[in-house]
Length: 370
Image (tube, rainbow, N blue to C red; front, side, top):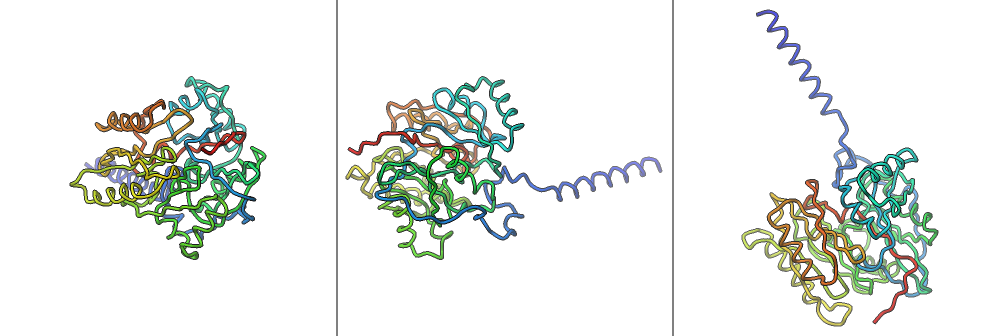
């Protein structure tokens, strides 16, 4: 009996010690889309290398997601399934951010072993803190002389390596870099390539030092946005990013999530849809508003968090009963595009495919406005 009691006591001590150590382990910040507890207590300084510049010269044009892309940026270790890299690399270049040459070789081998077209894979040694390239990645513009550039901004997370990625990519592409002193994240911004853009009111909350008019002035000066739609957030979750419930599909089309009438957020989603239906698109007529059922809450249905990559639409699917309906919604809204479902059990209602990828505009594109 004494031996049994001693063994039980030792087991208890070991288990207790493991729990204490587990509590002291730092969380994996690469997997925290929200601010970690430690980050909440850090002095916020997202300006390690950020600096304000004059805006681009002349009439500025901000490139939309649905325009031609020459590449797409992801971070390694991947926050996306390798099947997505394989799909993107079929007919577009993929730029992978890596910490060093050793990690570059590891990533290359991983791609090669998973049948990725490595002829379309490039690598940039630029350490990152997380895999949300959408949120901290570069915003592309053309100035009044049709010269390409990148607009940088203070990223709204205290992750200095992430915050420097637009600088690294501007140097990599050898194009101009502009600094717009507006704290934000790419997941809370979408534009139509013709002077209209949208965000949730998080943009106001995070930049309370400015008036709403001053914020509108900044995006006009640096991005050429003449109509900046700022909306309430129907998702009602921590992130408040517009790409979690809405998406410009073209200059005249917008996709908005939808929930059941019994959902307490139902009216908020309907109000968001009505908001765009009552706005004039760049085509001079009201937006065509398409809907996709995203019940969310206890199930992950992040269908608006897709990536338009040239003539493909890459849609996150989760094995939900609503996956097929979501793919069909895109096929109806975007005829002529190849709609591809990308499965992962790591897609969430606040963080999916769009959040973890960022297109690089075709900086040699010819643009015709008609």
